[in-house]
Image (cartoon, rainbow, N blue to C red; front, top):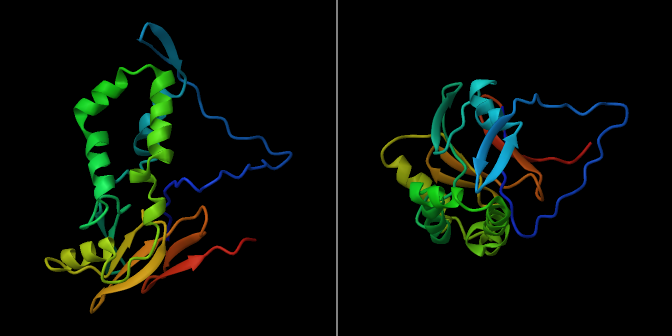
Length: 207
């Protein structure tokens, strides 16, 4: 099983990808949906893909840490955002983003403004991008490790697997429990592997 988490930071620069010659790029089916917003008629040919993973591929999407059992080992897996005692800036911003009234207001923005605002908040805003927080805080201060320890007070987990911190790390949080952060696959090229008995973080070394 391969687990990969990644966030976007301000320092990440996209690397152009050269599609292999002689191989046609895959094309998604088009199923146009027409609607009017701000007086503009919009035709979205790919609107059907909103629930593609769930309805077409039968792949669920998890928005909160979720428990899994693999080979009698109990995992708690999640992105890691907004968990634990820290990450206060992100928590405040997440409340705004997930608020139903905020979503309703955003829907009424013209796309030209809405796209620019979303890009700014996603990449430029220090509260979300987390560049200044991508520093190891020490085993006693890492807030996802503290979150894992608090969860162990009510139930045992063998492995806690999170992302969001942009730092790969492994911290023992209990006698038989370990917290792993997968780092990212944009700059660190790290990922996690479970071999059926133990979990480990690896680094992709290229071809």
